[in-house]
Amino acid sequence: MLLWNGIDPSDPGPALEQTLAEVERYFKVRITVHDCQSRFFDARGESFFHNRHFHTASYCLDGRYETPGWDEHCKLDCAFTAEAIAHQEHKVFLHRCWKGVTELIVPVEEETQQGGSTMLLFYAGPFRAGEKESAEVLRELPESWVSRWRQLPCVHPSEVDLLARILLLIGHGMLHYAAEAHRDDNPLRRRGIIRKFLYDHAHEAVNFAALCRELALSPSRTRAVVALHFGVPFHRLLETERMIRAEKYLAETEYPLKEIAEKTGYVNEYHFNRTFRRHFGMPPGEYRRRRRSAPN
Image 1 (cartoon, helix red, strand yellow):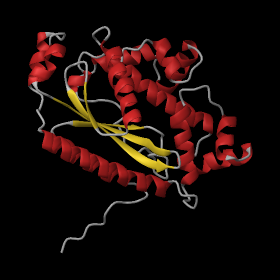
Image 2 (cartoon, rainbow, N blue to C red):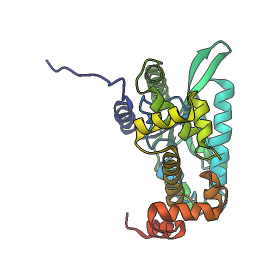
Image 3 (cartoon, rainbow, N blue to C red):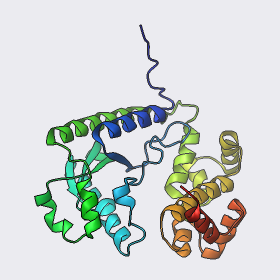
């Protein structure tokens, strides 16, 4: 008899990632996850959804940062319009994006005294709907993109229904593991609070005093807790989180350095450049050029 150890409740992320990867292979889609209220962290403060916070399908990425206006269209369509519908309707729905593809959007709700609250959003796609339904959108795209559109999978309605039910069950399972990670008697809970604090506020002008208030501890006690769980002071943790984000922006977007500085919590580009050079040994502009020229 083959026995299975199940899912480690203290670290469900690997099992979740394996499950989502299998779902992607079966349905031939990519799954993106939005943690709407920053709840899905394990007790160590690590996100359950590593590298799933943005669309990675090649159809979505190609041309997005090279063609003027495309990045703005994508943000408006998925990050704002689709998400607003999910929060308003509280139901699974299909969303047709401006590039003529369809994605399944699955909100995962948690009941509160005020009613249902959206905790998590799954985006699954892209796939084709009927060519007749997409004709108007496809007329606005270059012919090369229409050809790529025809190569995408066409998912049958029964498969869409099955995919929606699978993602709902996965999402509610993650609610359980998130609740376990945040229990007051969990010895790693404070580490998770600190990691979540950084995740939520690293792009802001946040300081050590704000973390003290978040933990409801004195400055000396907060310093001791940070040192116990991470081995470095708070300002180093904050800088590392900001540099991780800066590295991703430089490698994956065309944002100017001034905008990246603002998005990573720096008051000006000079301070950002100086910190980046100290962290990576080169200025951000050179880092971007090297990343772009490196062989895949």
